[in-house]
Length: 154
Image 1 (tube, rainbow, N blue to C red):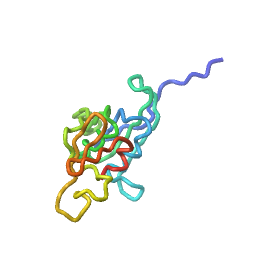
Image 2: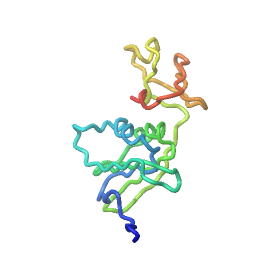
Image 3: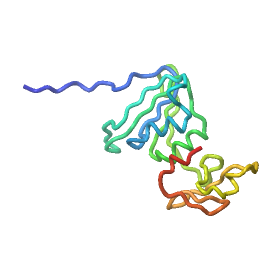
Image 4: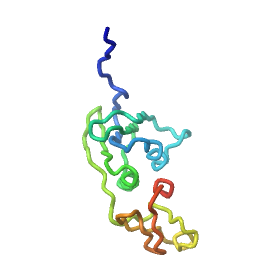
C-alpha cells in the first residue's frame, strides 16, 4: 500500500507584500535580522526553511505581508543570498519579480570589524566596502571580511 500525498502549498499566499524566494538554505533568519524583523515587530510573516528546490537542492522562503522592500534592503539580502529573487505581490498577483545584485560598493550596509577604522568612530561618515572576489574590502582601513558577512551587516 502506497502512502503518497498530493503536493500542497507549504505556505499560504499573501494578498500584498513581498516574497523572498531562493534564499540560501539556513539564511532565512539572517534575512529577517537584516530587515529588522524581530519577534517584537508587527509584521505578519511566513517562513519556510530547507524546502526542496530543483534549482538549489534546498532553499528558504520568507513572505512578508504589507511590506515592499526598498533597494537598500535588497542589497543587504544579496550579500547572504546571492541567488534570491524578490517578488512584489499586490492583490495576490506577482506585479514585479527581480533577482538581487550585489553592488560594486556598499555604503552604510556593513560595519567594519576593525575597531580602529575611522568608520567606527564618531566621524560623520558611512562605512564603505568594495566587493572583491574574496569578500568585502573596507575602503578606509583595508580590512577584508571573508566569512560570516551576515554578522557584520548593519
